[in-house]
Image (cartoon, rainbow, N blue to C red; front, side, top):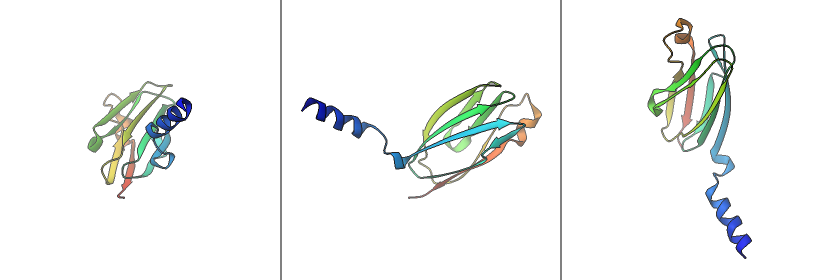
Length: 111
């Protein structure tokens, strides 16, 4: 019985697969690939930011997210997409003038 209870508790704690969205975004040559992400409201979004050639960042103002990755490395982070709408994500590093051109769109569809 203890095994059944432990299994049930584990299932209750894990996020249902349909509410999780995983993305790998590659930053290379001042471009995010992919540069368009679509999720549903309240999805748990997991992003792996892979910087292939130079330091980069990933920022979404409305979600108060700013993450940085050194050149040739990757970082992974999660957030809850609790605000419906269309949001720009961008590189906010100021030391590389090409970063100002790195932009993409996160679309969160209302449930």
